[in-house]
Length: 321
Image (cartoon, rainbow, N blue to C red; front, side, top):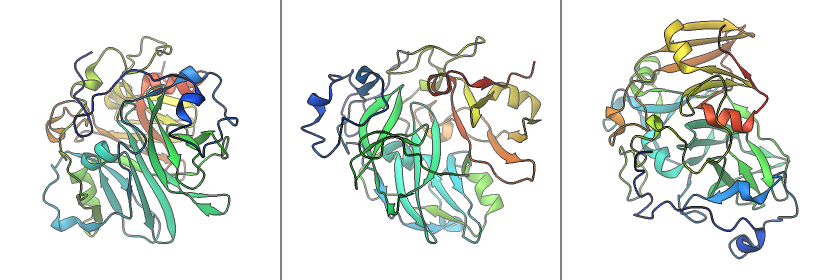
């Protein structure tokens, strides 16, 4: 694996800390470790930064699409288009360094999340059991995927599956909202009157990729689970809808696939956020739009194949043969 650069103010990524709740309780005194769905604590390890070492954002500012000049044309953004609300773009150049944005769109509190190590970009409704949760980055990983936590109950959440895995809200599932990654140019062309999250007031190298060369690696970082079947490369992007996964190379070749009640359209133009040192110079990995039979946008994820296999070991691989 090519070298992963030091992250978060020069803090180097390290190996796993002690896989024992007694070790974590000094940092998490209000988390109930007796409640968990994690079968073995060794599945959870430190990603290097401590709790909040990667600072999640709350109540971000936005600027008009037309006035934004920092973002490269092919840079990836997470697009959120909710009925009756102005479309919003959340640039990956910022989420790479913050991973979670706690926002409110109209009256809907949302969490826009991005786990670089799994390429997983998911948006959730923050309302749970009559309260609005505010999410932070725990500094822990499971199957190389970010473990989030909520500040209200100090429960831990698995980002890739949007489910509580430790603490009072263990087993609770967040509602996922339809959002997708696409190029900044694609968002602007469709939403000339849209909004884009403005640059956060943090001292970060926005626009740089601290995981240079990661998605060309042969093995995932901090992952010891099984590799995907069918000869699929672990770092191949797949489009996950429910418990099904479509390999991105198949979609890029076909351009459009209709099966299992899903239509997936692929088009070029989006740079990988995990390739070169500068995100805007990343190789073209394309974008997808996922819709149901009625043409409505579907919640989905574009994640690495190893992560799909880790969290959906019995999932269905849509290989087209």
